[in-house]
Image 1 (cartoon, helix red, strand yellow):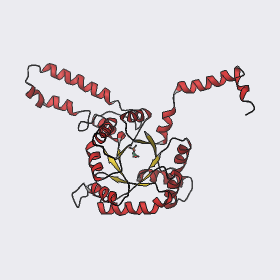
Image 2 (cartoon, protein in one colour; image 1 turned 30 degrees about the vertical axis):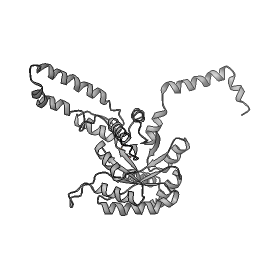
Image 3 (tube, helix red, strand yellow; image 1 turned 60 degrees about the horizontal axis):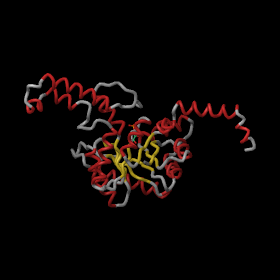
Image 4 (cartoon, helix red, strand yellow; image 1 turned 45 degrees about the vertical axis):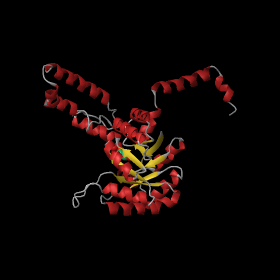
Length: 305
Ligand code: G3P
């Protein structure tokens, strides 16, 4: 699995690239805003165009950089995408344009604007990263429309499920969807015990049972990781060339579970990438090997270095 860094902060991009594990960069308007605010706080007067140029240059030819459009109307999105591509792609030939999958425009009462834009851009040879994907169904449509990448938002899917269940959580908390499912299975078992005499057809329509089945998932999706797993399965089954970028990633364990799904890429903030490396026993081991080496005189070996 490739790892992209999800940030617009140049210092983070440079640092993570220096670790030798970064294959691309994803940004969005919120991340750009965050990066600009940080620069302003440091007293720097930031020129956005040169800043984005610098991101593209730093990433270099081999690492795609996703830059997002802001409009909701297909023609505007295509115009903005062309603008971004023409302006920034010549720097390092690595620009991918982020298009939201669903956009609802009051005037048109339509929500397929994203699909139209993806399709037009595909025909013009502009690569797209279809963002804000929350279901496998959306991913399928994006792929059919010609998306180069789709970005299912694993963390936000978890947030949605947790919030509907009234579970309190902090942004980076691991979401144990298996525990949730176990709880619902137990509850369902209790309900079924009470109604063993009833017919299957009655149970099938029983509102209490329906309620339990419908809880803890979003249209049958029990977590962000599961959403990604289903997309991987579907794309493999039909040999779809669209690559999957698992996005909106919140913690190291989630990255591991995403890697297990077989998705192509995971884009994560630098804090999560750092968390992937940490383990208290590793730290303890490093310290101990060092002090033992010093005590045993082993460190003498390297004195001349
Ligand atoms: O790449 C999309 C990502 O930036 C969204 O992450 O944590 O705001 O849901 P988050």
